[in-house]
Amino acid sequence: MTFFQSLILGIIQGLTEYLPISSSAHLVLVPYLLNWNFPTEQIFPFDVLVQLGTLVAVILYFWKDLVSIVKSFFLGLINKEPFKDPQARLGWYLILATIPAGLAGLLFKSQVEAAFSAPRLTAYFLFGTAVLLILADLVGKRTRQLEEITWWDALWIGLFQAVSLFPGISRSGATISGGMTHNLDRSSSARFSFLISIPVMLGAGLVSLKDLSAVPNLPGFLPMLVVGFIAAVIVGYLSIHWFLDFIKRQRLWYFAVYCILLASAVLIVASIRATSVQASATPSSEDAPTADLQLASSQTTDFQIINLQYSNSLDWLIPTMTSCANLLQKTALVTHNLPADEMSLKNADLILRWGSPAPLNQTANQLGLEQLVLAANNDSPLNSLSLDAARRIFDGEITTWGNLHSFCPDCLKQPYDSGNDGKSIVLNFYPPEEDIQTLFIQKVMLGQPVAAEIGLLVPDASAMRESISGNANVIGFLPVNSLNSSVREITLNGSDPSTLQIPILAITSAQPQGKIKEWLLCLQKVLNP
Image (cartoon, rainbow, N blue to C red; front, side, top):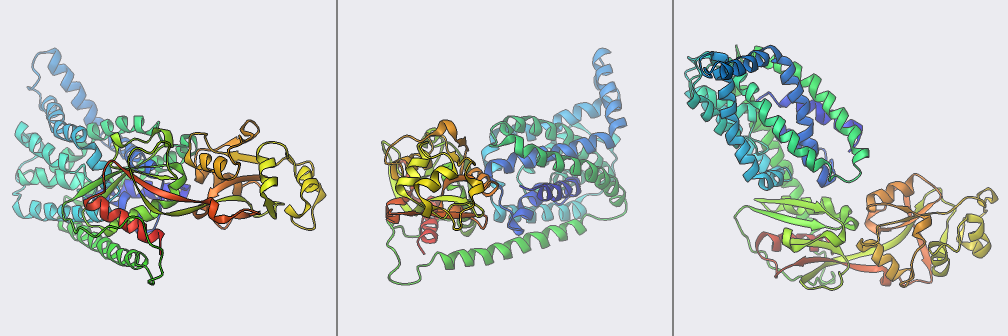
């Protein structure tokens, strides 16, 4: 995620949190429509934490009301008259309205997280928001004000808020509709809606702090969070002020029309992309490689969440994973990027990894082959390497470009710049338990250890690529699909490329069935065009 992307998403969060058009839907759909692919483990923490920005905005806007409610609430407890003062009663009603959403969040956390990876499902939920807004305007008599609210009104609105945990069901839209169907006027419904957002958003933010600690490269991710947070605070405050003035004079159907148009646009785009993925997933000739996973489409219709764990070496496969899930209707992915030694089928439907674990005790289907390559910066002095030279570099025998020039002059670009003689060759490695590191040691180093004590340890292929692209002295090894315009493959003279092709395996506890079966077939066809 870049600073620009976090700024845009922060502005969108601020604009849409308190308008009845679902901020969570926009945080899902805007990246989808713009083809922004973020690390899966960052998406949910970012979405929840940026909502803290709009939480700050609503607290600032209703500060006087909140002080009055809290003061009356505790005075009522001290005087043993908890429900006498209208403001104290309002405090109790806010607590009551929060309970359904809190329980739903605990019970359906994994399903809610999965929905954040399902743009189609989010679009369908947007249609639901539109229906709620239209019904609220048609059914509600709008004859009661906030001072007349009862415990049953509060619980009813709280039930609407519980449904809105899913992206696409607008929290403000659902709760305002809940109030209006109990005959509260628009302004009173909106004010109560905004007030009950505070405990729910605060609770969700505190829970997400725990998830945030598990985000890889957290120090590098925090500046993006700060940018999104500040943007959400400023824009959120302004949107609250605008909406409360707007709703006094206008109906909600304007927002219903917007939800319908946005949802329709998303489904059209999803259909076009699904057609494109389907076309690329169809073998172009009878000579196409034969896949090991021979699966027929089961045409299942029930909604299914695929709980997936994948190793760091396959982060380049995320866009394809997502596209194949979007191709299958009523399907969502919950993905977990984990170190290879921490992956377990006890906590997942399947595991994707590069190469076979030792020992392999479960069913494994081969989806395709991936090439392991050495890589360097475009400005690197390297031209190519012999296998012998590569092994001498990675076991620490050759440490500078001058050493390499003396051992293998043809390995360097000509004419060679002698100014590089004293510069160290910087080695990048992965943690020893990672499958990509194991493959490198087995296939390139032939089982010999590497000089990791003089190298730089990186967590995954993305970090490896970033490190290589930023320093002409760095070399490392990558899946070939992780290369980009700033990183090039270094030819290994004397090696058979086929020996560096390693299978991508889908490991399951039993032969795949249903949507998992169809999803794996899609991946296999894309990997074997």
